[in-house]
Length: 329
Length: 302
Image 1 (tube, rainbow over the protein chains, first blue to last red):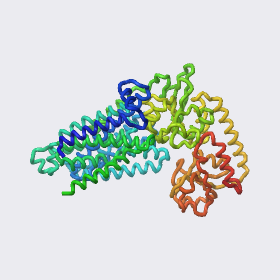
Image 2: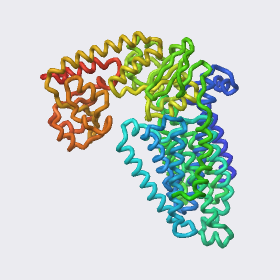
Image 3: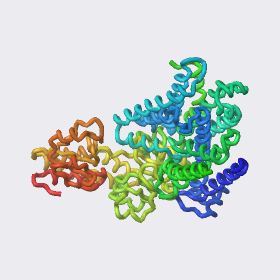
């Protein structure tokens, strides 16, 4: 498939997903009612559903999904590891410790921002810790050490979460499990604004690193000889990808699979050129998460399924089909 | 120690969130309700409530469309004669009269769209950390909400008074609370002369999850002539090892569903399935105490 063709298809799919997401939700509204609400007419409760619930949820899904997929593609390129995904550096573990700590200390109700702020702080702490370890030996950032440090830090934070939950009340455990499962249900316009403030600049900067990332894929030494500032590219790209992940996990919890499967699927379709892979991964992740969240909302409405369940249920078969197709000569 | 560059970087990264977090507090809603931490407004007709989260909630008048996410609160509303005010239910409401109402999903992280579509002027939700997204979203949507947390018998009675005040049925709530207290006193007096029975309330599982001190169930067991075998548990509910369970010399196991009990836990012990009789800390509290007392009486049968 050509890059332009896939880009156009993904853009069309994202637009269709947004239309579907505005039209369908847990409550049945007619097309006329949705259009009236979008135009500022109709009853207030319908305007609230369409404008204050569905639209911010769609935008948040697109930002978080796009950010996770872009981060996944970046980590896979830099770590040269097909299993790399946005949470590989312990970011979800750090965020979980922050969130669970706030829940266990009874601070989550102090302000609606307490939990996402704590999650973001935990995620950034994890990133800082992993980077510190990976650069401890000298001035260069060794991606093998980074990967190892990430796995170890993730395991440590996972133990911290288990410890906090084991000494917490059942209701704290319940709250933590709901948060860790990931959801876009808490979407609001203010949340969209904050997430966009992190995601869009970070994504834009990452896209400018596509060419050096292509060189890095050949090998760091070769990239250096071909003129890439290897250390700068590594640090900048990793920091930006980590920030994208941290912003997503802070507002939506831990949503798995998007950052692993989407970049691989795009790579299978258009190859490994990051000038195409990165923007298409963002578009693909945004579309995939928005569509998954619509399914999560309507399939058992009004009961909501964790969106991570849908991303896995839909993503695994889709990915296996693509993988099989790529293996057949 | 974090380096100064790292501290600056962290501050910059957290800035967009802190700007939001330090924004203006919630103001009064257009309909006169407010859900903030400020002191109550004493304007005429307004109802000021302090909920289980310690928040002051002000309603412009008695709630006329109530959505309860807490099944015991739904039962309380019916006991106060306010069933007609209830506009939606959760999937966990088992009372028959509520089954015709639209569902909003679970009591935790319900469908916000379904809540908005029900057009409530008051949402009753679980207080505490179980679900932080729902109260935040309700604040954003401008829908007044109160949190209740009926952990103990006194909490259940407080919730009745709170819901009575919120729906303009304060007198009915007072009367119901007095009636329930009299019923509980009568069970307590009847059980006082009996030899206590060592009893465990097991929610299920292997290792078993048991009710500890500070719970509504613990109070019911002790009030009705039982001695909670896990009165020394460190938290409200917790899983204990099978070894620990078997060492407690338990005379009776009460459980909502015997099918959820592990075979190692139930082996050789008297098990009585009580369904959801003890699961709703609300207007059924005195009846639940009578049920437990009957089971703990010598020769007592389910």
